[in-house]
Amino acid sequence: MVTDTIADFIIRIKNAGAVRKERIEMPYSNMRNGIAQKLRVRKYIDNVDTVGHGTKKRLVITLAYDKDGRHRVQGVKRISKPGCRVYMGVRDIYPVKNNHGIMLFSTPKGILTDDEARKEHVGGETLFSIW
Image (cartoon, rainbow, N blue to C red; front, side, top):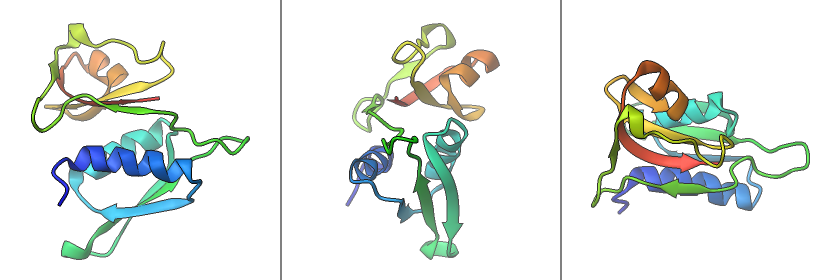
């Protein structure tokens, strides 16, 4: 049984890209869907679909590759974990890999990237960084 669903989600994306899979499928949750939508907007994944309904609902993610065939996700780092939550105020948010990556936050305004959190002037739980 998976206790950290967000870590499972981002590692599935990273590992599937390492073996050049076209798409991956996993159980649906609102949190996973919100994160996937942010990753799609920032071009780390190509597409997000949901299939099924009720308890059989699944999230289908199409992975993104550049023109040379390299996976767009080069690395991920889980920051806040179930055993040790990490929160950042808006003044504490820093750029990831000299602005070549993003950090995702769970805020009162929903799932936001580091740029969006600074613009909205909110902090929250630091989920992970991706580059």
